[in-house]
Length: 440
Image (cartoon, rainbow, N blue to C red; front, side, top):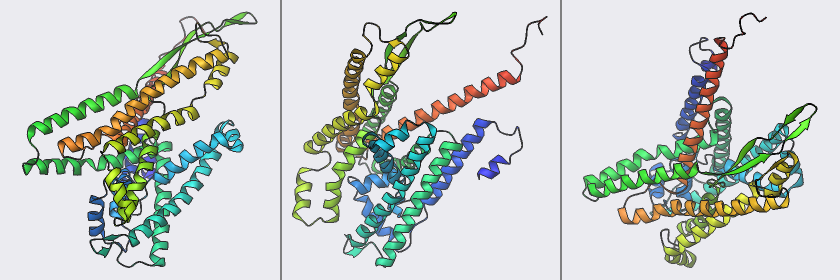
């Protein structure tokens, strides 16, 4: 596909159009692979099994993979191992001196960390693939097994297939990032989530056709969806502009500096990481109760940690706030920012450079992190509230909405940046800048 686009006649497509075609082509390959199943599984029984797993870890993985886990395709693991490996690598960069030194070496160091992330992705995919194969073989459903012909041979074949599928998805994501528009991994998750929208819309229409849902509730639900999306877009673009002023300095016969600037600090600096961490930790007990439903632990979890209950929501909100502060403290370093400003002659008006500037930045980030964490908590708890009141699957909420909106905004920003570069290129090619008459 990449060679076919590259061989198009010169002038047929501009650079941006080729990038968009690359992106759509690679996403089409991914969606085709989602429908390639691994042999040896009762797909109909597996589909019925996943209809009952919407509230646990299996349901969350199935949503992020665009239904690939439900079909048990070669792309069943999707990009989840890569995301886990990336998060682990990012955390280890703070505590491992070797990785911290690599992160400061520029492009060469980042490539080395990316290579480590790829190795970690393959290892995690192998471990997760074997766990899923073993769980499906052992999990009974309606008195029968989900696996038609199990055994060690089937588990090894399934594990290798899932690992290879994850490696191929990782390659697709990197190709989209390099040749296409936007972040490849985010766009793959985006495509998987959006692919489930027609089924949710069809389910809602079916309830309306059978008089289980009236038109007034559907209209109210549509209004809530629009308001929630508008609020997410507004807050994801929200930043605090910290004024920065640079002192004047004379070098030779010239004076440099003296200009004013701003340091933008996002309201939601942690992004979608806190909800993913919190939901993953909370889904493990629910997954255990689904695999072994007849145990005392499962009965306790079903009675006290039911999704939508006050205890579940309270723990969910507390974990989101904790991980928001934890991740922001790793990615945002007030001491380094204050030191860099001091080296380049910059300062915040009314604040002394150095330690006072670091303390000022830390106070601002702490308040913004609390606001961002409460915003994330409201978005993530909203689906459980609306599902109970409207009796429909509220698809526009939680991590899925944050990923979809964030990916769409970032992709549109990159498209606009490419459009601006094309305008500048055409401006220069037309020879708009010409010397004055009479000059050589």
